[in-house]
Image 1 (cartoon, rainbow, N blue to C red):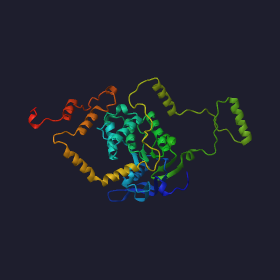
Image 2 (tube, rainbow, N blue to C red; image 1 turned 60 degrees about the horizontal axis):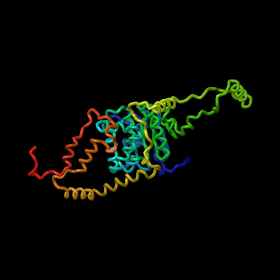
Image 3 (cartoon, rainbow, N blue to C red; image 1 turned 180 degrees about the vertical axis):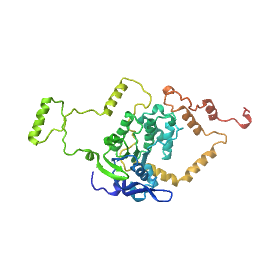
Image 4 (cartoon, helix red, strand yellow; image 1 turned 90 degrees about the vertical axis):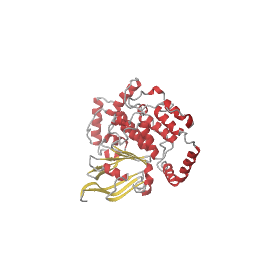
Length: 402
């Protein structure tokens, strides 16, 4: 990566960013962020680390335009964070999963898809792909209010990707996830980076950041304490590590003698490399799945959806252009609705609305009816009543009083 990068090519840039929270009398009370300078490049996974109260969430809220900086400059895609035009290019998973608890998973994703003016067919295609990716197809009809914290994090991650963002901001994405969900999120971040997406990751779990981040910044008390490449910051200077197949004690002694004789250096430590607990755990779980053992909760996750296209420069433009066109053509859409309504008889029901009610009540027609047991409090649709409404109504004089 080039050392000199123009501001136009940076996804995120802050210069002297400072945020001071003041009390009722407008006196400086807390300095949350102090003189922060960041540059995040396209396709980069950038980690923002620090203990509680270090300014991570405040920095993220400023980048999202939710807070205004006290001093300094901030640019996202070369524009101020408050610019509405860049909102469609950002996906955000907050630290807490703020979801409508009475909507199920499909209704939740459909709601966010509508916010980006996605067509009905495109919304459904993305919904199914994302549900498959996070392994929640079997729980798609449950209200998200009854989800576990880990399941809520996964559906929150799916909503952050519904608009195919160029910049994905994740605040504690693996909080509440088991090792399977954690590995899913880390693999997803790597895949998004390979496809040209930019990811800003804030987490307390240092091992997760170490596994996926290209560069990282450590904050303490709102100040930047370390900044650089992950390998560069974590490498231990002055030591050399050699890994080979298992050696006998005699060979180890002879190698040590050779090092002392040729290099005048001492062997600091000789040990067998250990496996990571996460990798060991996942191997055990995969073996259990191969043995066809069943478990409740999240099902096996799928691959990254194909609509999350490669490239970080144009995938969000289609949504932006659609939003701009919609704001310029309200009269044409209104005239179409008026004309359609004029042609419809007064007593004729809106069949397309009723059809959506049928689909919402019975789920996808392609899914088998016995794929998932009915929820105890799930709303039931009276199919006979719907069929009656879909039929052509009788003339007023022939209607029964019943």
